Image 1 (cartoon, rainbow over the protein chains, first blue to last red):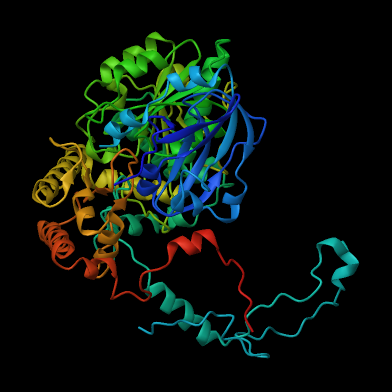
Image 2 (tube, chains in turn orange, green):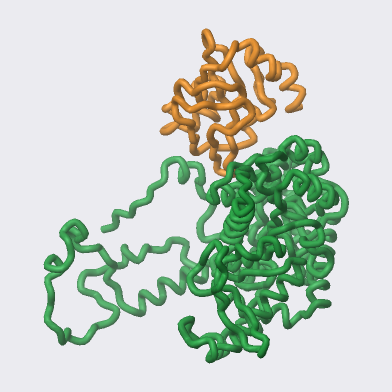
Length: 129
Length: 485
């Protein structure tokens, strides 16, 4: 059974978002997503400074089986990326909610507003069954 | 077969040669006197030094490890790995085709030009298009060519449209080709039946829509029943419809993209028309268009004069230009022509009917063991899900590996992306019922093994030259340099 953490917001595309501080949001993919993808071998990041839009692609995640788009759950600007994943993409499999985080984005508007358009842990659980 | 095979570099012994050249009868020139130093090697290339017979044995042994349609069943979904009839090869080797040169005068290659002209017309008739170019060398090359035609069409009308819409079940080449042609792509979700979601399409089209790219039947093996409505939505917004012909093997002589409302079509001759495929190519991806797009076709095309002679028609001022040297992969076009002439119109229809019948037969028999992703009647291919086996710790990848032990090339796995643990099977029309039954029995046996002895499946394959490869480490920490000797 895949882990879903209570305090995070989720997208239907299986990304999670966590409020860090102010308008900064940390983004990764869910435990369920990594289990579907299988062994992840490469993460293609957006460049820091890139503008991203909710629901649009901002990179890709390559596993042994497939290449999957990485969608941004929020609209804003990329502040930093998790460079550790370049050498250790397996962190996304091993600890998707911690060491396997992917980018931090400064959201446009308030975090509450951005998260209001996303799914709660409960709703996300219902989607993945 | 020996399990370990030395690299040819490891067989090298100093001083061994395969062939001795006669003594040089012109003066030696020092390379550094004619080539800039930056372009010269600092040390000699470490080319293997081996006898001729060892070179022959080395590569012959490697070639025997290849797998192709002439070795066995190859049910690779969405790739139409059908048997390549040998009569195609005979015809392509006729001296009048094999020994001509593209710079020969037109009057000396009238037969070859007539073949190209006839093939252009045959493919136009088969797809319901007005004109065809045979230049593109592959399916994705055809996609790119078609998109450049769409771009030229909109630009000629002073209409800047830079968005191409693709469904989430589309081939990965569709968004890639659109991007290379300079468009932005928008992906729309399929509905629960695997079809285009009309509401999502209506929401996505607008004054910036250049085209919708669609494969019909789709990659799920389903015929897009709402195609007329889809065409209307896209056309009403001022966009064009692009037909990805990867799955044309299901509809020959039965339905035509031109009649469905498509404006541009590509066909993969190396799929539908039985020319070599999958490393044995080269390919060919002819593109057909409706008359409003013909002025933009790559030049030349082959035309016919009133006196019955044929010529390279280069007087096409609005053409997007040449997309391939000379006129595409001519030898492949000859094979496709031979195939079409061998079958004739009724025969091609029968090809598609049998391809669809074979797929439905297999889907029906496998349904109790692997979940059918979209139940109902399929076209030439179908998608199963291996998710039932996950309870035993067995995944689709393991089923595919186990199939190798029985001498089959596994089907397409983990594509399309919108089906969990997907297995996409396309038997094609060229297989006997015996072959289909043997494959079905094997798939059933593997499903049973997964339940009763999952370890047997998880450790497969056993009979291949190398056993289960560590694909993860190979992708994460690739070693791309051989430091031999």
